[in-house]
Length: 508
Image (cartoon, rainbow, N blue to C red; front, side, top):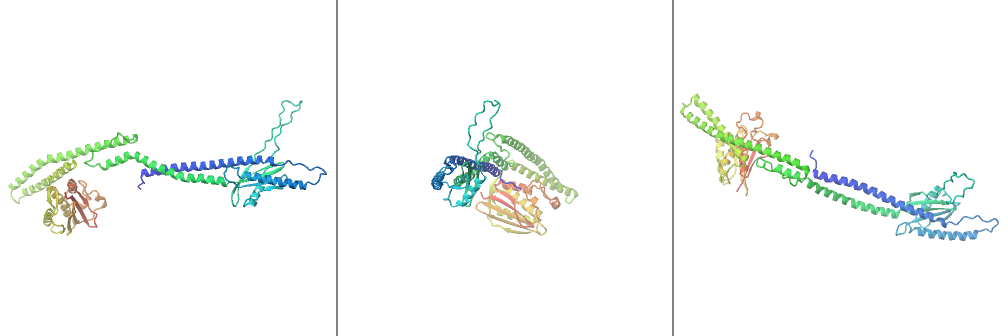
């Protein structure tokens, strides 16, 4: 299975790691800020609960036989309510906000009688119920701290005073009503009880603003991280791309390519050095192989020529129809065949070295195709030949080499044809290119052989062509000649039971 781009995976992985870090940091920061704001609100709420203590009048027992104080109590109750109303109004602006914060206040006396309760909120009944329930769960605060009495003079010096009882700060809880969320604190004093509820609307708005900032900034930061990782990984992988480009150019004619190491990262130096050494070894091996085949073909050319000449002269001196003539004729055919192989090897070695010399003239391809047709009609009269080309198809090229290409293609079309088969010859030209296609009836070529059909000395399945002459150099040499002309020779994709080769040559 082919994996996605390493550069893309690296950028996405960097973005994922940075995203998880930023999301975790944002979540922790959001909760820390929220807890800090709630703690600050609790501290202010505690401060206001403690400041409310002076507003409670001292509890005094009525004197025995005194007149009924109903009218005085009524006036005092009215003054207390006004004082608590003013206190509640001041609380609305006292909790760290520039706007009025909804606040609920409930004040009870020592006998749980309501001295004051808020009645200006939409959900007064529900909030007051929560305040009353909180007061019922709040323990009575200890008496104010007093100085311990002096120890008697006859007290043992090692006697320790009992520890002072410090008042426990009130506990704060968060409750939710149908309209808002409240932070509630309550405290009980010997002469009265007080509970305050502060709406968390302002805190929620501030936290929503912080959350929105995180929601906008984190994706932006992730985008920057992904782009940065993409650019950094591109710079880091540049030697790999350079190595890939050189590998793509490595052919028999491109083995002199080398990758410079001067500006390469340390991590890639060893890889590039090994690759350059491999190219050096390959270049040396190909040079030696090419030189060997060229030298061998060149050295064998002279003795084969001499041998062929002697056989031809001896063949003329023997009696016609004798057994000696037959043997000499067979030897002469093998020598000619061996000479053809040497000539092909010499041309291939020159092509490998990039030294194949071309004698460029204007070649009439229509005329060459007509000559090939005459040969086909003489060598394979049982085959049906169809043509589709016009006269005057001319290119610049080496006439002898182009004849050899066409001879190889027609020879294959005859050798690998079916009994009573057919051959089609099509040729057409464009403003820049000439296309010659030769199609013949044949057995299907296996898919695994299509990529190797131009390899040297490759002849496919021996069971299918053991009776067919050849050593597997014709198509390889034909393609090298076509490429030497800046063209190409390809095997076309066709329907079953046929094979098609297309020769492409530039017009100039």
